Length: 452
Image 1: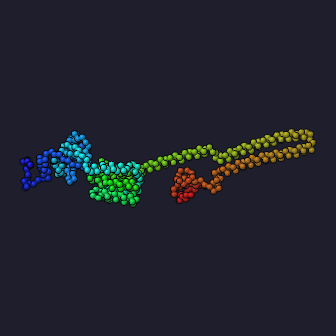
Image 2: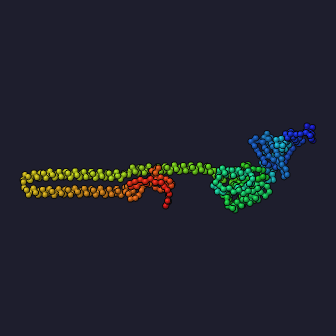
Image 3: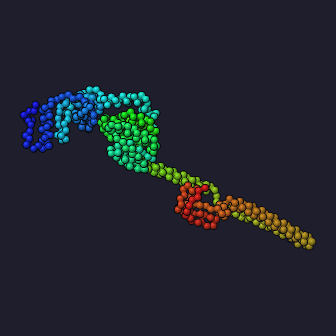
């Protein structure tokens, strides 16, 4: 019965929307006392405020519900979507939206919902058959060339996926297989799309996705036909259905489960910026190591160069040694000649003293003969040392790099660094070269490299 306070309004009275909602709320609260309502929980939300928002429904109707945080202290269970519950509630109206709702005072379980029971039964059946086993999971390719997406062409999920792929991996090709993601016949369409993508072999990986929703909204992904299509597919499949708290049969059968469609897109797409940064880091390390290796080789060459005397230095030493030998021979010869001259002078004096002309003549001839022998001996010694000098000079000429250049060879170095070029691994067309010949240097620019 309507109280006098909330008597029926005059038909000629004009209400504002706020006044109308306020009066309807007052009427509902006065007419209906706290009552018990039984139904299945759906669309459960737990915001940071701690309040619970959900829908109670049966086979033909549903009503919005709210249970404030201060009413949850005596609750002995964790409410979940699909649960059958008994709620003691007051009937009210949310004036801001003009929506009728139940304000829950007490909440207790009344048994699992039919959909939840069916979900658990199929989950146990497929698990027993091994459809969830890790041994059947296929690896996701690190750099897929083509990514397939099975989802609604009008949903937010496909836009979220494309946005993530464009940002992280713009080089990958995308093929969209549009399907209905809820409602009658949608499970069959989803399974057919999986089979079609697998038969075409045009994709390296598949994303199965849709946005969040109630257990009824997501039920297409709990159908056995979808689960078996995922299991039979050769191509790796990532399930990105619903939100993080939503689990479907497709999640358990798929090779990877992502908490959201965006997460699924991130899972199949490498971050190109990160990969490029890693490559640049490795390139810098490789260049640094190559420079160190080249510097070590240069230091080794310098050390060996210090240990190996230059041919000109060796030739100078031999010339100085030859000069020393020549001076020693000359000194010995001069000494010998001086001694002979002394001896000759002594005999000459004797001859003059005796004045025998014949003896003097013979002695003169003897002296001439001895002098000739001495001269020949000197010439033989000189010829011997000159021959040795020529032989050593020939040996030095044979090993000298200058002789190699005179035979038509050349030494090629980098124009900028002066490093000797031994192969073309670090050369590019346009690089400058210095070509050292026997009697000239030539600066050149590389036009083309002919590999052998």
